[in-house]
Length: 129
Image (cartoon, rainbow, N blue to C red; front, side):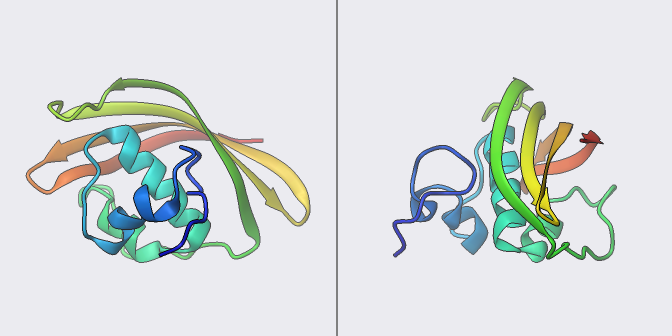
């Protein structure tokens, strides 16, 4: 068991936060939990998890992660819906990164949907800076 902090920024350890989602031993209860676990999957390079949690209607066939991007922090700015009993949710966030030694920010408003399989990422409107 690792005591390392979870990349998603909750302050909890990875094994008590996003780790169970990534291992498939738990499912996110909220859209925000799914979004945080997806951010952590980008940090640790889990393309399969990202595809599994992507809604089939919008999911790409493959996903190649850019090894040159180093994700450095996450800020959740707002949520709308996305609770354990909701069917839809929206999460606005900023994901900080470095590319070729230069800092940058991905600002996204992501849409999520919940069905019998749990929460899934549908799509997002993103800007890079």
